[in-house]
Structure formats: structure tokens, C-alpha cells
Amino acid sequence: MNRLAGKVALVTGAGRGIGAAIARAFAAEGAAVVLAELDGSSAEATAHEIGKQQAGARALAVPTDVTRAASVQAAVAEAERVFGPVDVLVNNAGINVFADPLTMTDDDWRRCFAVDLDGVWNGCRAVLPGMVERRAGSIVNIASTHAFQIIPGCFPYPVAKHGVIGLTRALGIEYAPKNVRVNAIAPGYIETQLTHDWWNAQPDPEAARRATLELPPMKRIGRPEEVAMTAVFLASDEAPFINASCITIDGGRCALHHE
Ligand code: NDP
Image (cartoon, rainbow, N blue to C red):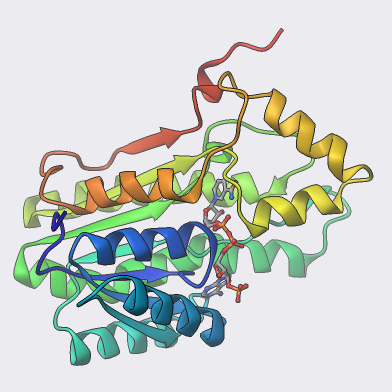
């Protein structure tokens, strides 16, 4: 407990799923947390739940659209006004855009990159000046195993997630001399609304769910809390020499050779 005591953290897309689990875990470890989320009501509900479950927890919901740089800057300004300078940023907000490359619309391409890559950059550039000035900070970008492996039919999501790894490594190197660490987490299948939406979009949702559970060596999918624990570690002072890296959380699936 208290591994993030005294820190201020901003988590994007924290109203539900992995982002909400990260916000809960950060608050449990003593951080003041800003839930920067498109859907203000889900962020409010999660912040309220954190406050109810954890005595002394500090959680603030700020409606934010990560695709708009000004919106993210306003969220950072609000975090600073209420809690103080942001020590930790988790760029978690993301959407699935899965299409056929040649029939995909321009709008699909732009929507994917606006959230999944521009959104991460907007977060980074909103907090970096302050972190550089204070010579301290940790940024954690939520990528995906799609950043390393291509599953047919998922275009252009993996292209954007490859970009997240590139951005993580580039900024990690750029700001290492200023003691700002930039790392990524690459989750495999994690059970959230996103996963349920994907199963439900398949012709046979139950068969799709069973196939997902059959693929990983551990024969299960991950829980949001399992990603959150790694985010706590990367955000904390327990990882002072981990920079420009990515930790995969997929039960070993990426290492498995498929015949
Ligand atoms: P969810 O869809 O459950 O949650 C994503 C959250 O991001 C939602 O609360 C959503 O808000 C929010 N969001 C979407 N667009 C924006 C935006 N423009 N500005 C601010 N917030 C926004 O997804 P997960 O929790 O499953 O995924 C979280 C991250 O993890 C994503 O980056 C995803 O790509 C990644 N990931 C997930 C995996 C999985 O299996 N679940 C696997 C690998 C990676 P709203 O509800 O209003 O749309």
C-alpha cells in the first residue's frame, strides 16, 4: 500500500474497463487520481465509487476528449488546480477500429488514429513540459499485443498501436536525461466492454468467446486489475530504471508458436 503516496496521476479513458481498474489501483496506492474520460457520467460514477470504497481517496472526474489537444490540456490544468502537478500520466483511452483495408472509409482511418495515436501524443505533450521542468515523471501508454502481432481483419488498429510503441520509445529516449520515463503496457485479451462488444459483433458470439479463451497458453483471458498492477509498478518509484520499454501482459500468448 501507499506505493504512489503523494503522487498525482491522470488516467485517460478511466470511466470503465482497464482505465477504471488503473484509477482504482492508483487511488488504493495513495495517489490522487484524475479520471479524464469522454463520458463524464461514467467517470463520475467510477470516481464516486473510489471515494466510497477507499477512505481518504482523492478522485476527480474531468470530461475529456483525448482527440482534442485543448481538452487534454484543460484536464491537466484542472488536475494541477485541484491536486497539484501531474507526476504520472496513463494514456489508456483507446478504441477498436477493425476494417478491411481496401473498403475501409477515410473516416474509420482518422477515427482510429485520432483516439489511439493522436490521443496518446496529446496526453504526452500536455504533461511533458511540467515533468521536464520538475525533472520527474512517469508516462505509461496502453498499447496492445496488436503492436507486435497482426491478426487479419483488424486493420488499422495494429498500425496505430505500433505507433504507440514508437512514440513510447522515442519520447523515452528524448526525455531520459530529464528523468522522465515513458513506458508502455501491451495487454492481450482483457475482459472489458471492448472485448464483449467484439464478441457480440461476431456471427456466433459464444463461439468467438470460446475461441478467445482457447488461444492463450493459460486458457483464460486477463482481468483489468492485472493490467492495473503493472501500471502501478511502472508509475511508482520501484521502476526508476525502466524506460522506453514495453511489458506484455498476455499470459504468454505472444511467445506461443502456432502451427
Ligand atoms: P473500454 O472500451 O472498456 O474503455 C475505453 C475507455 O476509453 C472508455 O471509457 C471510453 O469512453 C474511453 N474513450 C474512448 N474514446 C475516448 C476519447 N476520445 N477521449 C477520452 N476517453 C475516450 O476499453 P478497454 O478498457 O478494454 O481498453 C483500454 C485500453 O486498452 C485501450 O487503449 C485498448 O486499445 C487497450 N487494449 C485493450 C485490450 C482488451 O482486450 N480489452 C487488449 C489490448 C489493448 P466511452 O465509454 O465514453 O466511449
